[in-house]
Length: 280
Image 1 (spheres, rainbow, N blue to C red):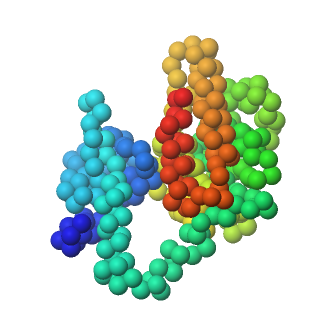
Image 2 (cartoon, rainbow, N blue to C red):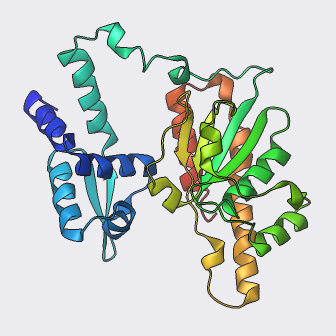
């Protein structure tokens, strides 16, 4: 982008409402999000959101696509990267001391030595099915290379009964899993996370405080099986399918060649896993 376009993009972000829209879309990248979902997630009037989206779109920061009757929005990563480059290299003349936070330990490539154990956190809303499946599967598939954790932004009191049935049928000890709140991972005594995955759209839409250490993040959204309509057989099948989808994703995750991947390459791999394997 030229200087005029960059200044317009900065002006578009210089508003708390528009910034909240941009943050939500960043958390959902590489997914796109329908306008109706954003109004609910951000508690905005449709007319207000429309104004915000129009300004961000004209500034080149987001793109609009149509899916059937619904308009979807997503961040334009290339133009956003151009804006950041403009700030660093043009405005700030590339001064290294201004990049200290970006070049901190949390932003470096993650080394994958034989002695490295990755801490992985899965986040959803209730922490009663999808994130629990992910935690259980990674505990089984990850060996001593991964420590798996899960939590919810609004945790339920107990696991969904059908989730317990699936865990037992797959050979997991269901008694060791229970819903937990995200706040315990902001405690100073909590383990430092290397990866954080949101596994439901609602959790990704929420603006939660970032965890320390700048973990690699990705959105692996999938439908809530408990919302499946139909009889008990149809609902049971939905829970099994949710487990199977998560299992495929995590088998792909643990097989990644971490030692040969830069942080950028790793991010792309994680985004691809969340997209390509969805519903496979």
